[in-house]
Length: 260
Ligand code: 13P
Image (cartoon, rainbow, N blue to C red; front, top):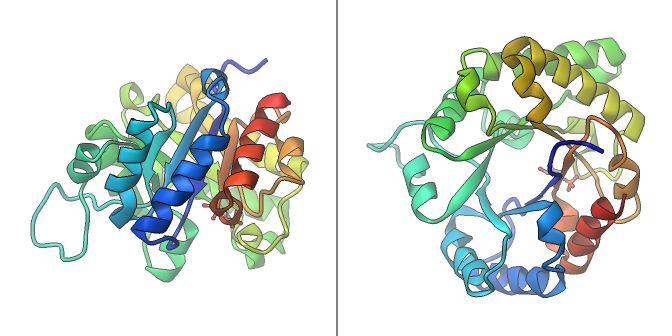
């Protein structure tokens, strides 16, 4: 048995108006068995504009589901039009925040430096970062070793300046870009191999703390495949995109992970 509490994260991406987000959250909470929360941590990451209302739904339900954000800016405040700070996220009740998602890296041109700054700002502000890493298809085509080098470089670039005392809050999500939204998930064995390599890298950076850090897999997870990922020794949860927009599928996936 792993010493780590499994972490299942819903990333709603740019989906749902506030009314739709409230309805989806209510639907998910109605389907999640409260007992499930004793052994698992479940995080929902709606768009910024929905955070407050989704937080209210969670609070009203007295649910243990945690609120997360999909991104953050590293500056505490100031003239950064359109940006949201760590303090703003904390004030609305966010405990988690995704950082370095491949969609941000690719579409919004975020580099390793920005990712590292965001991560540091989150840790300083008491919000747990979920660091996303993952190789594109053209790197994977060069083989497993090339994919591993690419991913570990991303891990090191984001984490090499992080203080070990703060690192315990961190989670890392391995999301190969070619698997996101494509229906072509990595094999559980491949995901496990990469997770083990990531954990080795975390050991080099943080020593024994690495045993407590959760490593997630993300990319085309669904009701049909999630149960195969759960038993892998270095995988401690999932980061779920498309399937998390379906309350029935998402709640079933939480349960399937728990049953393994
Ligand atoms: P999908 O589950 O839709 O493939 O998305 C994965 C993802 O990017 C979660 O952050």
